[in-house]
Image 1: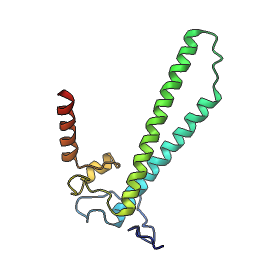
Image 2: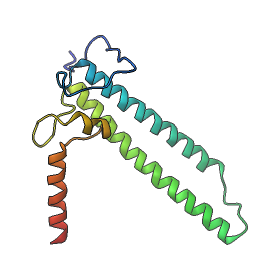
Image 3: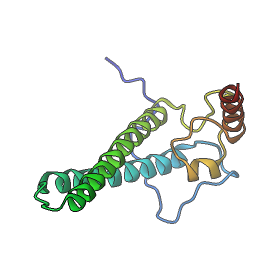
Image 4: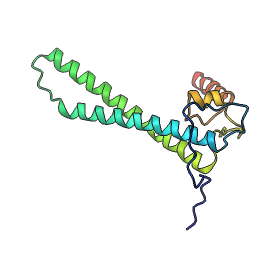
Amino acid sequence: MQETSSRPETPVAVPPDYRPTEAEPFMNSLMQAYFRKKLLNWRNELLSESTDTLHHLQEGGFDEADDADRASVEATRALELRTRDRARKLISKIDEALERIAAGAYGFCEETHEPISISRLEARPIATLSLEAQERHERMERTHRDE
């Protein structure tokens, strides 16, 4: 079975000082490699933090004699679990963004199919909507929530 991915055969090396600009062709191979690297680094950081959290949760027991201390430990664990769940969801969105890069759809608004601004992708590399589409979406949510 032949692979239909638009991923280049030879990995593109991203210079350490490279930053994508609006002046270059949108989502050229260097820009794709830059965002792929950025997403993979973010994913690896989240996985590392998640592993640290898991180890921390496994090593501690509920040996606290004082009820206040036990409640504090339980609250801390609950917070760590919520944080870990948030990281899991974020990793899933990062994986989806990496799939969009492989498919050649990364950086384009899912609603308008127009390019998402470089500054938005820099700030939120998992973005699937342009700023305008995101704002429209949020206004619609507020309108429906208020009804």
